[in-house]
Amino acid sequence: MTDLLTVRDVHKAFGDLQVLRGISFDVSAGTVTAVIGPSGSGKTTVLRTLNALDQADSGEITVGDVAVDFGRPVNRATLARFRAQSGMVFQAHNLFPHKTVLQNIIEGPVIVQKRPKAEAVEDARGLLAQVGLAEKADQYPYQLSGGQQQRVGIARALALRPKLMLFDEPTSALDPELVGDVLRVIKDLASQGWTMVIVTHEIRFAQQVADQVLFIDGGTVLESGPPQQVLVEPAEARTRQFLQRILDPI
Amino acid sequence: MDGSTWELIARNLWPMLVATLTQTIPLTAISFVVGLVIALFVALARMSRIGALSALARAYISVIRGTPLLVQLFIVFYALPQLNIVIDPFPAAVIAFSLNVGGYAAEVIRAAILSIPKGQWEAAQTIGMGYSTTLQRVILPQAARTAVPPLSNTLISLVKDTSLASTILVTELLRVAQLAAAPTFDFFALYGVAAVYYWVICLVLSFAQGRLETRLERYIAR
Image: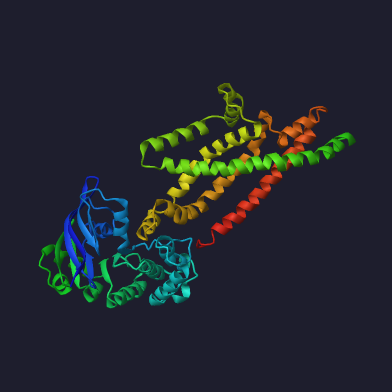
């Protein structure tokens, strides 16, 4: 399989704090990668460097056909092309509160990609149906539950037709009974062949959906491989310790 | 009050209304709009990562807020001619009031922009928006909600501050009242009418503020 995403020796510091210390991994087209790790390990920062919300200090990242060497100055046009390769779903959804659900979804396609509005609206309605919210098109975000808001967030990211979908702890801010709806949507996307990188604490979900699991600790990929290997028979003591704490917190 | 006072009032109701409609209100409206444009750019400059730009904006705000409006008005109208810059009363008033509004409203707009969560900037960035598109389509529409009450204060203050333009020969509402009262010394009656006119304008503006706030809050959970 061809790699849709390659990450090579990515470093990132915030001031004196070295958060990423040489991250490397590959993601094949059409596969799901789950990123797990303790809080403060750098897993969210890894995800944010993948579409340059946080720009890596050094290292190379290739998404689709755009390769960027972050060790050198990156010009704005390249950065924009790089960002356009991936869609991002945030933990706190970050929907635009002053726009309806439909307006949230067509904003990128119409304003940024300059696609005809009628076409974007039709697309958006299709996406809303896909995430189970067809009848919510004209509501404002505040009128939706947390899980519904998150699914709109997913539809908004999909609307730009990215090659890669990034999820930053998409269920961490949700009430437990709303988590399932969001995970089901992500599972659907996986079965449709979307390439996704998901930072998550849902170990069981990762086990079911992921083709590859990365365990990140101290700003490096401590362990990676198929879920059966990393989640069930981890080689590293740190991974075992982490999984035990998360699966059996008391 | 005797009959002649009533007659004096009646005779001046219309000229004072004309002064209100042709001088006071246009002076307020033009100065406020120009002032808001100045304020937006000053606010953005103040938040800029470019040190010199931010310092310049800070200095501007400091000078405007640290000097009396009347002095600013006098500098534009009476002092600039010394540098061979002669400006007519009305445009001179517009310049002084606009610069003044620009200084005060800049801080309001800056605070309103800063009140929008960082996630909104990030979400806009991930759907491919640049700085100015994000500002126009995502940040400012939300910041408006926070900014409307304090900006309404600025506007209502401005309505009344335009009376200071009487000192640089703008024939606005107060100036007309002054001129009418001068021959008879019946200041009470005519300044009373002027006060009522100012008050009515401010009542209308307060009402409009309420409507605008309701409109801007339609997407907020209550």
